[in-house]
Length: 185
Length: 292
Image 1 (cartoon, rainbow over the protein chains, first blue to last red):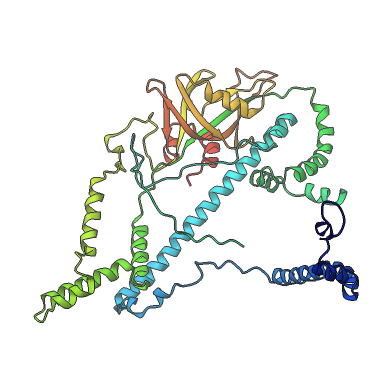
Image 2 (tube, rainbow over the protein chains, first blue to last red):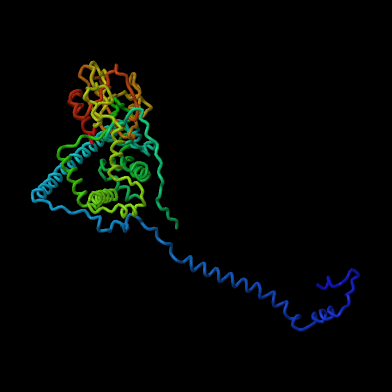
């Protein structure tokens, strides 16, 4: 500021305003203030930053909201009473028939299960015998047989369908809009 | 380290085998350590007899299964039960959107046909648009379904030959071939003789690939044999060195393949095996062929 007041020659230009400016330079408040200003400003900024950080930490401490499982909440529209189907009154014979059929079914399933368990038991026994015989033959082959096969898994197989696959069938192309909600934590 | 190993060694062998089969890769490390400590004692006794070659010839055979392509027919009781379940589910359910729409449409129709029908009031609600009733939609859907012709379930009515892979789509079939063993030509599971330097599984694979005029792509289920058939040669053929043969069977699933109709192949169900295999052979093979 004072350099700008000085002219090209380097001497201070005279004038009634400039004199008062020069006197300002030496007045008491101006002499003391500049140093304090340099300390307080960084301190103030630091204080502001610390307060912001504390607020952020408080917000972070809150545990993240759990993602709701949409299958477990019954949507409101199914609580509507108009949707209830009229429960038919079953005659006695019908309810008897149902009870007897259920018992018949449980018996059928039990025999099926027993047969399955037996079949699996026989297969396991057959394998055990095979390994025993192999061991009697040669230890090396036995060890080779016990090694697991890394190429077997992942094993994929298309299960049985209701109708056999059609040769040279072209499935029609379809579009769909996926409206599942994706939650991020 | 010693204590847990000895406990594992005391477990019966069959449990160990089932664990090996079931767990596969994961627990191999643990199991192998226990096995080595268990068989160290065994190998010491075996090393004395290693010098003498065993008097049994080894064969590797493959039990190739074609898994079912369609679901089986229901039993009468399964039919009844399925119907009952369907009925009970229907009774205990709420009305769906589609059904509610049907009800509303039918109500609207009855209101239209009633005497005091105010068409202006009704059409004001719907903004004068042409509504497609739910019944119409159902009809269009049924029409579309009729256009699609699925493949027939029972194609066996024509009597497909026994050698075709396409027969009995609802059951799992096993491959049988005719091979000359000794002096006779008999039906059996494809087998090949073991040669030194290969594992038995490789023998089985070789037996499958060496079948003339057929290329079957199979996935072998593991390195362990699933069954064994041991037989002694007739007395004329028996010598000091070979008393008989042991056939080790390996299971495999058919993934793709074809065969010409000329070669004698048979794809048979488990119940039909009796007609082709010899009784002692069948006894052993029947155990590991599961009809599940």
